Image (cartoon, rainbow, N blue to C red; front, side, top):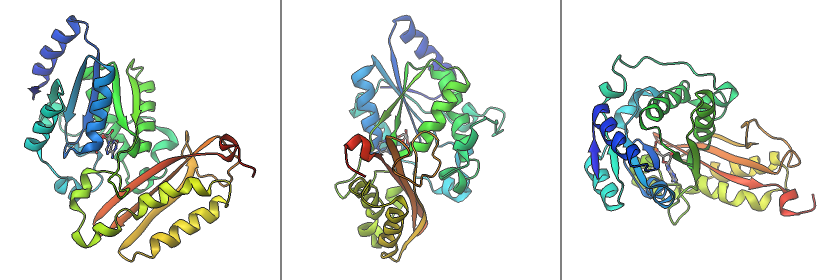
Length: 290
Ligand code: AMP
């Protein structure tokens, strides 16, 4: 695996590969890699000639400076993992390489998508995400960009960015990889306190069981049941649980609204904020009477 730390090195590598007409799958990450990240790599390897990963803990997407400071950084282990999974090149820039003029925030017209759900709770977060992905797409110019469904709102934001900047890159969304107990894998899971480990999968249980309730109970009742279930576990502080339109992320009140919905939520376990989501199929698609 080639490790490229500067834009000059990246450009030289890309020129060689583009000359050889290689197609490129790109997997941007913030490191502290786990099986979720590696599933994106595996999908990219199946579809493209080359897989390029990036590791960059992007300061502009952290609304909480403490979260940025404490974000796990295991670059040596990450490099070994990517080598083992036969990634072709790793772009591992420092901050000055990505933001040579300092962290000046750009402004993107992301519409309502950036103000709901995660956006409501993490002001400015999605502008930071859009900014860094814009920079990385301009640099790598991949054929396909591989993203995880785990960060569903981020996927919609990046799809919007791709259309705003007229990028020819195709976005590929990969399923959420979970622990055996259901917990969605996340770099932040490493910071869950030992005494909270047993209850950490509670949010994923709400997400994974919701489909059984679609069309049988109202959305309001499903949310009430979910909140009651999570509230039983005292250390859990619920940030939000919602059922939303899968394209606009606006809250829904009736199962009759469309063919697919998204259930999503965020909880705090001590200092750690966990998010999760699942796509729900409507009773119409499942051919249930409702
Ligand atoms: P991050 O390093 O957290 O910025 O994540 C980099 C990419 O990996 C994003 O596209 C995430 O959505 C994706 N990702 C993170 N966790 C998972 C997971 N459990 N399953 C699948 N993809 C994931």
